[in-house]
Image (cartoon, rainbow, N blue to C red; front, side, top):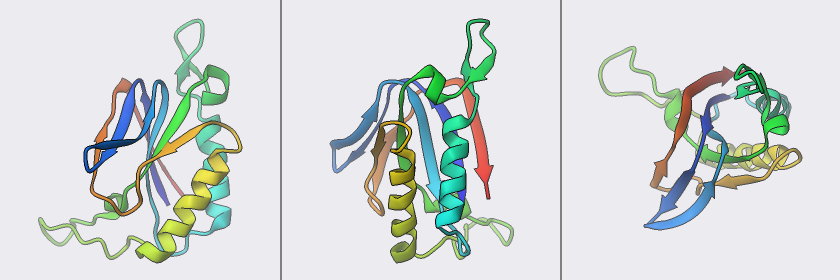
Length: 144
């Protein structure tokens, strides 16, 4: 499992021109799965995401989590996080988990996050237009 975490201001996702998810502040997560990922994996990483200290404290030091700072999460499925370009210019996605299995883990991951904070999502497998206001910019790659 790979999660690209971005500290965010206003961010949104549209499908067919219609907004399906949006946040005012918080985290945008681009989430991808690979073979071997499990419910244990998603529980562990969901807990790490919400405790990740990348929000500023009163001294403007990144020392607060989303739980301390406030805000929401916009979670976007992104199988292309497993794109491999080691054999040329056209990425191979063979390491990305197949859709039928990945959607189950994606939904379970979002359910796990919802135990801690409000979560908005895109539409799994859809062609999405994602608008991310990256604050900082702060971008962290998490991987199991």
